Amino acid sequence: RLGLAGRASPTKPKSRLRHREHIDYGESSYPGSSRSRINDNIKPLVMPEPAVTSDGEPINILSLNEKVCKWPIGEPGDDDFRFCGNRKENGSPYCAEHTRVAYQPLEKKKKKNKLLNKRMPASKINNF
Image (cartoon, rainbow, N blue to C red; front, side, top):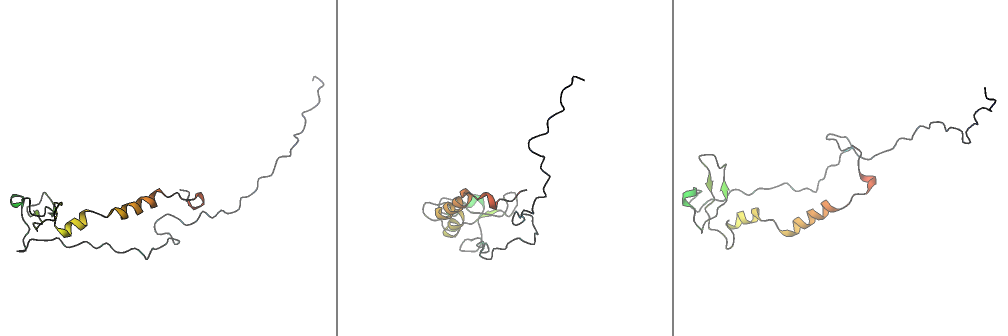
C-alpha cells in the first residue's frame, strides 16, 4: 500500500525448545518413601515410674505441705488424681526423681537450638 518494505527478520533465530534433563532433588520427604533413612542412633525414651510415698500410697491435695513432692499423678479431673508425696529436694517442689524429669540440662537445649538454627544448603532442600 505505502510501498514500504516488509518487516525485517529478527537478528536472532528463535531457539528450539529443549527438553530438560531429569533433575534429582534428593530423597522424598513423604512418609513411606522407599528412600527414607532410618536413624539407628536414636535412643528410646524411657519414662520413670511414678514415685510414691514410703508407705506406697500417693497423697491427695488436702495432704500437701511444703515438705512433700508435688508431682501430679493421673488426670486432674479423675477421682483417683493424686500427688507423689515423697520428700522433696531443697529448692525444688519435686522429689529427686521428678526433679530430673522436670528440669532438663541446659546443654541439651543449647545443642537442640544449634541444630534448629543451622542453615541448610539450598541443594539439600526438597521442593514441595
